[in-house]
Image (cartoon, rainbow, N blue to C red):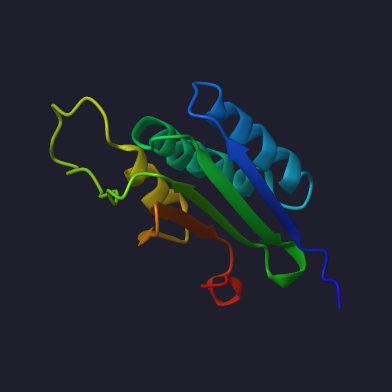
Length: 136
């Protein structure tokens, strides 16, 4: 039975425009299917992990998104890239650090997030929505 779930896959080059392309794609895919705050948070988290992939990956990245509005609004976004270095949260007390705070934003806005090494690189993901409906 089709529940109206939305799935999207997007290949992004290693360019300055890629985070904007990803933001626009997620915004369009979610459309009027969620609250504006949910969409804004999803766009922000997407932007952060795509930006990291573009900065640290070797050849761009691939974004996978799934959203099930009927299943409690469960959203999962995965970004894979060619770097095997797993991200980590920057020390919140390091006020002299120039960058690296993006994952703190993801940590605050998403229901949960994580990363894992895969052959040829890694996947960084986040989930938003009702935790019991988000796929692991």
